[in-house]
Length: 233
Image (tube, rainbow, N blue to C red; front, side, top):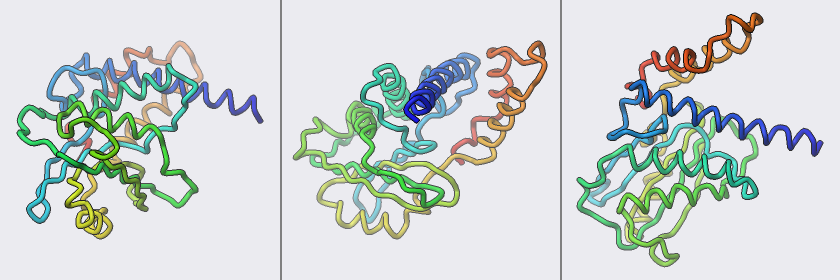
């Protein structure tokens, strides 16, 4: 059992390495149209400033579930940290926002497609908070200036997570709005894009003739032909 666990964790790390390579190639060949500047990650977060009942709320939407936290593996954590930092910072021109929350709440709403047992207490959320702090929307993230709230929702459309930044003064009102309207507030990836990528990947790895298997560069270019502009809907 322990040997299998070690093997699976190593495979998870290899997947992240492959993602780093694929994201880099997608950006090199111009397949990432949602970034506001040259970046190295894909897909980007969806960033949306909102006014709800005349108070400001900032929303960050991320594809998939928040990855597992592996404190002992620094290489894995570095890859995860790099992705969420760049996916956040390079997704929006925050210089246009002349506003900063004084005392705020960061709400991480994790949406799951089923009711499998999961733990919302994922310490990778600190990586999201660090990225948001660098946007300038919040000042220092001292405990008394930034509260953290985790909440989960069932969403048959697929796994994704939404992050909301709101003033502490408006938190009580907004959390009630979120509980009622989470389904409609959420921005999630177009599942047809993900299905296309998965099908392409599965068809490649099932090739029996090694000589006919595309090289990583070729596969990346073929995957990038799937339009990225509508990835977030």
